[in-house]
Image (cartoon, rainbow, N blue to C red; front, top):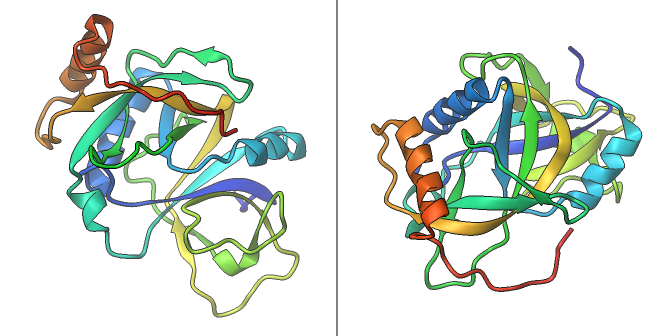
Length: 230
């Protein structure tokens, strides 16, 4: 399939103490349990750009590419990890996360908690061993709302392809493609503190334990009230 004219592009790497292979293994378990639906956590608020993407296309897509740089120590060995237990939509309506889904991120107990968001993704295809045939050159992309080039720090961005493609520039492989489905983009709330990631543990057990703790309230962290960032 050709690269869309407009799409969401996200680059992935080691996160919350888990390697890429481990992240995609658990995301595939989530996708299979939800009959194709999975959630992809991101750190930046792209709500207005997602809204514009929905105007531009009836079939919004998200393309996933591996990060080329070495993982940061804060990602490969975080001080703590949290799971997010509730969410809200672009319009501020509460959104109930499926019982088979768990969205995690790193957490620094000594710093103010960063906001966290997630893309709502769907694909009937397994996430593992999909190949990386398509290529993307960041210099060929522009931010959908501003028309500006994609910055190096923009791990996730909603973009459009430039009219003239560049030649001989750095290119990223596209390893996974998925559709964005309603509600497309959510803001995460109510983090639950997890133990250190156990890469050999049964992920299904981990998910069940987190949701049991959510019901009992035994692991809930206090969440400061803040203005909506969408």
